[in-house]
Image (tube, rainbow, N blue to C red; front, side, top):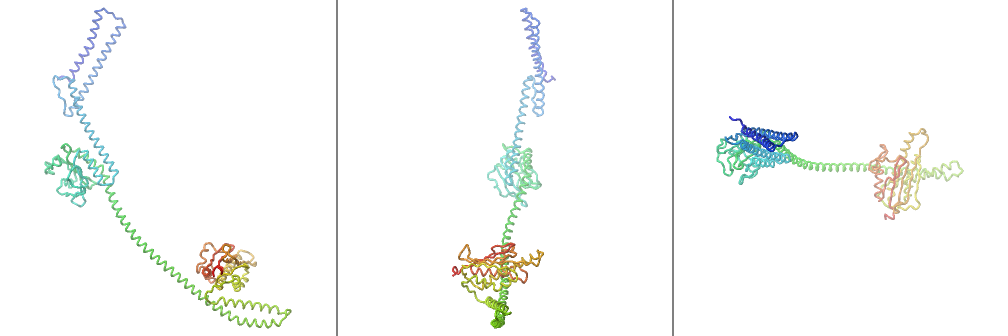
Length: 578
């Protein structure tokens, strides 16, 4: 057998010889005919040119050797594809090389086409994955899967049926390319359908001919075109949730394993997204139920809260009523006590008045018989003076303790102050409390009840005396010399109100212990007291507050502190009130 490429090599040798020998012979003939003599340099130049020609021919030979090697490789590649170009006798090697190269280019074009289709499949898969990463809608993702599956397989009709749990039916979630087909979200029976095989065996169904396949064996419907179709199961974990159906492959094509593989890859890539969407749907349904329960609980809680508030309001009202009842009962008891004390005081005053009149009568008889130079003259005078004072106190005590209706009259506040001191001045003197009275001479009369206003003054003066004694007792414990008396001071001022001339201002000041800030707002509350048990009822300031309000006046703490307290009382003048 003739060695492959030997003809091409022989032809190359002949060409080389002709290219080198013919020019050499021509030059030799020219030099000989014309008797041209060449010097050494010219001969060297001619020899150098010939060497260059020879080198070029050798390079050309090597190039043809490379071409022959490439021809052998192309023949091998074409032979592996089963389409080797047959060698024909009498055909030139160059022509054979050209035919082999054309066969190789054909195979390259086929490979390029296949590669382009694979790139298209990868792009479709990439787009599907991007959609899966963005959507949380189950049906939307299945619709995208159907669209991409039809694109990569060139299917013209497609559908996705969702398997209804615990039900022998499909629910149509996506369709494309078929007119008059099942509507979206409609139901189809699984039994007897082509997709039943997928549901029963949980495996893909690749059919090349619906009439010849043993798994189907049914006539082909002309509206589906090609008798080939592909049904793919869609799983979430191990649970079958839907079936993908593809038919009418382009140009009456037949679905093959490559179609099944690419669809399987697509389903696998979105399986995790489908699982997340299903979990999200369950979570959303659970959240909606929780929200409904929360709303129901909030409504129930609102009704319960309203009921509780109503009960608390009723209980608070009941407690307030009970507290008011207790206060009223205590006030009634206290009023009864005060009434009894008033009656007792009136009786005592009457009983004391009789023997006092006897004592005063005898003292007057004895005093008339004495002269100033007599030894007992001063003692009798002192007896008369004090018995007169006692009679005046008893008379005022009978008036003060007398129960009568409220009677508002124009009254002199200075006289009321003096009448009040008749009953308490001796206690202040014994307590070594200095008293200072500052009553304006032009003080107008006020409109009020003398007995009630005297009671207010008596309460304020009594509280001032107690505050001074409390401070004195505390200071005596702090000094070493207990024999040194500690005196306090009580000041009563009455004048026109500098801010309103239709009011009279009364100030009761003491140098006592003062009122703590934390209880300053409570001192006018009924039964509130800081005194020891048995020394106060907590009604004095409360009653005084009520009396002043009845007189359309004001009573308040003007100032308080460690150096004493000042109460301010404002009363309208008689001209304003009348």
